[in-house]
Image (cartoon, rainbow, N blue to C red; front, top):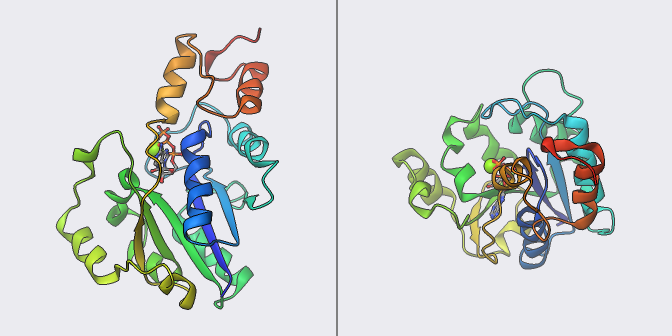
Length: 217
Ligand code: ATP
Ligand code: MG
């Protein structure tokens, strides 16, 4: 079965943490493609200072040379809050049910998963692949509801994700990279360098558009 990875995020800005997750899971899960899906108006975060157009442009610049990665702007065109469940329904109506969709999520995001809009329906539309976020393992402790959810859907067998189109949760080891958009925004605000944390061409875009209070050289 064709298998597509989905990596949603604010990408404010995109960095090597995001790109390595997509790359490593494309390999370990034998994904045909990975779709990077920037959110327009994230329900769980205050509004980003940088416009959705800039965040989307940075994602496109970052993945332009990788034919396995695809930009997916469907959340940007939606009016109002962008919910993952709506994105998955939209992908299903486009791609049908005979395709395996794997939602990729960092451990920090998963700790709040049971507060997401219609969260229990999400697993009927896709699989979930969890990756560990190195920064704060103590904060990643799961509540009872999520522990049960994990137990009920868990598989260690990657082949299972190719044989069914939705319904399973797996955990994948990745190279731990302690990079976050928050730390990058803070560094840029302080006029510190953000080189080697993200692709060079993304940083050039940030400087040329003077995003995150940078001043172009
Ligand atoms: P912010 O600091 O603004 O929240 P972020 O770096 O967490 O930004 P997001 O766009 O919020 O980036 O993350 C999108 C997805 O990528 C989430 O599922 C998040 O857990 C995951 N992720 C981001 N950075 C990493 C990383 N360095 N290691 C593992 N997962 C990550
Ligand atoms: Mg985040």
